[in-house]
Length: 162
Image (spheres, rainbow, N blue to C red):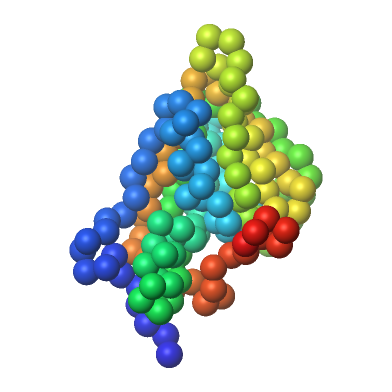
């Protein structure tokens, strides 16, 4: 039986978070772990110095309630936006494969001088995206209501206790 997911009758609302330091970024990294997206939904607007991804994130914040109430796990579409981008580089990705679907494992930050640094999006399958920034400003914003996760289960990481 397919059912529409919802924000628990209004008790939860769509995520809208901003990270301005490495500690804040850890929260966003945890919330986008196992997010999936087509490679075509990754965009760098050089002129606007903005990198963005439209992704389908697993709602980790809702997983305990789903288990407790024995209901379906959920995903939501969200936009991950990185501001003040100076350079973007990829490793282990075939950007010409327009059918590729990627999955985020984590987002890390390597600080540079005077507030600059490099964000590293580590992807499943040994891929990565390195994003050099003038300063750390990352936002995560849900743009759809939650929907039942197509797999019906929570993502797991063999060997990582999950």
